[in-house]
Amino acid sequence: MAQMTGNEQFQQWLAQINQECGNFAARPLDGEFSGHLETGYAQGLKLSTVTTANVNLYRTKNEISKHNDSWFYTVFQLEGQAIIEQNERQTVIQPGDITLVDASRPCSIIWQQRSRQTSLLLPRSLLEQQLRVGESHCVQRLGKNLPMVQMSHRLLQESMNNRELSGSESEAALEAIVCLLRPVLQQQDVTPSRRDKQFDKVLQLIDSHLQSEMLRPEWLANETGMSVRSLYRMFANKGLVVAQYIKNRRLDLCAKAIRSATDDEKLAGIGFSWGFTDHSHFSTAFRQRFGVSPGEYRKRNR
Image (spheres, helix red, strand yellow):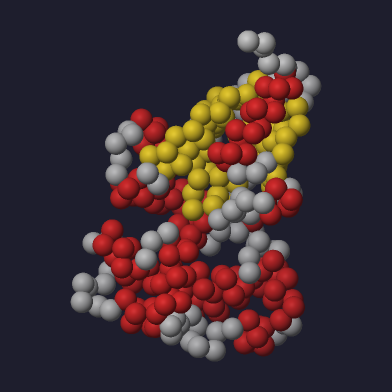
């Protein structure tokens, strides 16, 4: 069998990345390219370990439009270093560091030397239940010296080495990683700009009126003194759609209520209390957000 050329190895590696991690483009850098991809699935834990050198992997709006973007890449650096860019921010992560990359936004990863890192797919819905994720949370270096970061690395390693995890155990591991990283991410918040403060006020207004039928984009715009077009642009700049954000917030609170509900409490009533007047629509929307029906979600969280 003929040995593959360097370009053939590069194209094969990129094809594997696109198959397992989502759509990316790439370009080789000066020096000899090397690339290897290992994937692992332990129920809800979807992991990809990349070992590579001398390559730039990136996502533009074109790649994002071709693939699901409903997650974050939680990058655990194992060896070497990586230069990661997103939202006009650049960070360099070293072994033991962690950072978040938003799959819904363009990004770039540069490996100028041999590097090894594991990316854990973190569902957007899970992270947003714990934290209002904004631009300031992405591509922030969470340093290896932080206790919560060290614990997250250990939890990831133990989960990767245990292929016998059940579905509920893998979901619990995901939630535990989010809980560990949440205080670190909150501490990393930068001083908000005037635009960010205005956006935060809109989010607070949404949260305080989630049970109200009048909560619509037009009402929000009127209450905050901006045009509907400006409201849509504000959310679009954050990679969000205002109506979808409202629906997801309502679904997250429905999920929270279901986890603490008694067995005789009707699921339709929970949905209705958070603005879902049609049970069929509620059930469909809930399944799209969490991957299971409200009834199955209650069974899993008893």
